[in-house]
Image 1 (cartoon, rainbow, N blue to C red):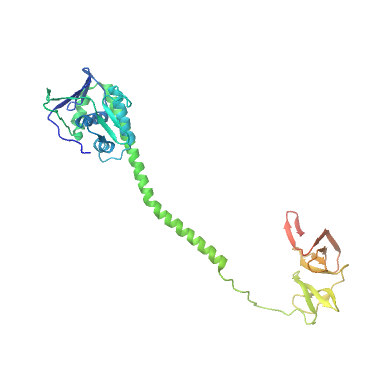
Image 2 (cartoon, rainbow, N blue to C red; image 1 turned 120 degrees about the vertical axis):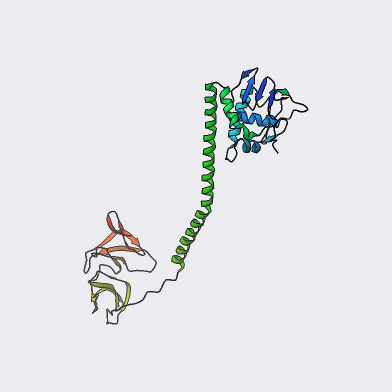
Length: 326
């Protein structure tokens, strides 16, 4: 939509009971002054200059708030204020027609006076919306009561502050939009790095253990079986002597194994307690079957059953009461 910008030297508009003089910034109703804010006055003049033509919301915003980011709500508020002042409503327009989601059109029959005389032909009188600032604003102040000018200034200040807030919000949104892709890349790279470290930890081949030193503990030639464990001084294990399982111990520096006193029943030692005072064992028997669990103090007892428990295997574990067998 191309907005008409040329204007006769002094056009005056008359519609219904209203008399609008853009040059003097005066709106009269039945010869009595009517209060309009400067922005509402500019919008009314722009609609009259293009009467019968549809002005889009973008057209109006670009002319009334040039070079400023303004939300549609500002325009809607000014149009609503203008309608209320003219004594009409949106559903039954007398002067300003709303084209939903598009814009506005001035529809009332209008008489045009040029330099105070009725215009010839269609009386097309067009004024630049840019001239509505400056001289017109000062002329409006001179013709209005003090409280009216103060009210108009207050409404304009509200509008300008709202526009400034919207401009700041738009700038902040643009800044955050520009920064957002960079942070996305950083987050993506960080996630890839974490995944790579986790994959390396899980799938990196673990080097086999390397024997750095060894000591031969026994030289007696008996078969050894069951677990090998130590209390810090001696190593404990089972030797098979003459077909019987014998619990023996040997100094950690090596030497000849010494048989420990025979337990009340044949048993297989499993582990030393964390305090290095007791040995956990189960009765010797068929593989895979559950057998009674025993605890004893080396080298020769005492021996005691552990809670009448039976198991195929057992180990020490720590709880709030200390160490128990499970």
